[in-house]
Length: 545
Image 1 (cartoon, rainbow, N blue to C red):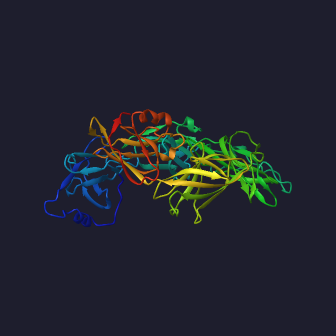
Image 2: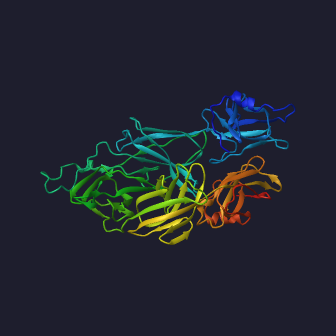
Image 3: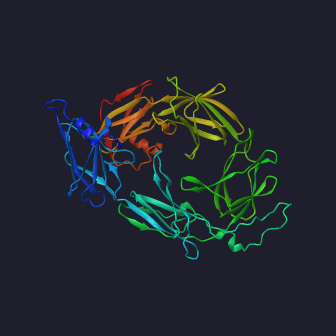
C-alpha cells in the first residue's frame, strides 16, 4: 500500500472517523518507531495513517521520547502506516520497493505492538582530482545500483551529480544497498586539432603539443575504465563513505566517420553510446570536422568500447540502420557504417478490444532483446503511432497508460496475424500494422498463509503460464497484516499464484527462477471479459526463499 499526501486538514479526517452512532466499534493502531540499523526507538518521528479506501483521509502524530505512537478511536477498516524523520529514509510499514503492508483493524488483529523501522540514510561523497592532484570542476559523477523493476536484475544509473570548484561531489539520502560509481570529465587544457583539412583550407594542421590532445576515459571506482571491472560499494544506513577519484589522461582518438546523405540533402552522422552495466549512455565528441563530402573527423573521445547507432531514414529514403558494437583504439581509424543493413519504418493503428475510445496519455513502446526501450510514441487522436526510423530486429510491443494496464493480444499486417506481443521488423521494410490490446479489468484477491496462519510482508506473484513470451502479464503485491493481497489490472490468461517469503531480491520474471515457485503455487484462469474481483477460494501457502 502506498502513502499519498492530501491538503485536507487533519481535523476533517478526525471528524470523518467519529462513530456514526452510539456504540460503534472503535480500534487502535499503536506501536514504536525504531532505527532499522540499531533498533533504538526514534523520538519525534512523524507517523501517518491513511484509510486505504479513501486516501484523502489521514491523520498524523509525533512519536514520544520512547518512540511510541498511537491512533485511537479508529473504525473497522484497513490503513497504511507511514513514518518520517529527519536523517532517515521515509518508509511505509514493512516496505519493499513500491509495496508495503497495510494494517487492518478489527477483532482478532494485534495492532497494538507494531514496529515501524526507519533506516538512517547513507552519504557517499569524495573528490575528483586530475593527474596533478588538482580538483576537476564540473565533472559528472554517476552512481548505479541494482534494479528489479522488470523482473530481473539490472544495474542502472541511479543519480548524477557534478563536482564543484573544489572537485567535491556528494550524494545524500541514500538507502542501504550496493552501489557503483563512475566519473566522466574533460581535461580543462585539452586541445583537439583536426588531423585532416579540406583542400580549400589555407593552412595545414595546427601545431599542437600531443600532450594536450588527450581525454579522460570514463573512470569507475576503483580506477577501472570498464564497468565489468568496477568495484562495488556496499552502504548501510548511517554510513558516510568517501570515495576519491584520480583521473589520468590518455591520447584522444581521431576517427574518420562516413556520414549518410549528400551535398544536396545534407548529411546525418551516426550517434555514439558507451555501454555502462545494463544500459548505454550518450557520448559527446569534442568536435566533428568535415574533411570532404560525407567524410568527417570525430575528435576528443578516449579509446574504448562503443555502440554506434545509425539512422534508418533521411527525408523518406531508407538508410543503413542498426546498432553496432565497435572497439575504437587507433587514431585515424575509419568508421564506415554506410554499407550496413537498410533501415525500416513502422506505423501502427491501435485499438482496445471492447472499448470504443482510447485513454488519454496512451503510449506505445518498443523493447529490444536486451530489454532496452528503443522507442516510445504517444498515440494520437486517430489512434495511430508513427515510429519513423527504427533498426531492423525483433521487438516487444508495450502499451503504457497511467490509469490502467494493457497487454498486446495480437498484431496484424497485410493479412498476416500473429498472437502475442512481438513484432519482427525486416531490413528496408515500411511496416503498417494493427495492434489489438486487451485491458486489465480484473483483480485477484486472496490470502497468504503458513500452516493456517496469515503471513504479512511476503511477495505475491501472479505468473503467466508462458512467462518467456508474456512478461507483460506478471503482477505483484505484498501481503497485508491479515495475509490478504490484491493483484490489480489483471489481463485474462492462465496463471500461477505464489507467495514467497523474503523473495524481493529474486529475478521473479525469469522462467527458470519463477518455475520452481509456480510448481507449488495455485493455478487459476482469469477468463476473457472478466471484470472486478476474482476471489481465490483457498489461501496460498507461503514458500520460503
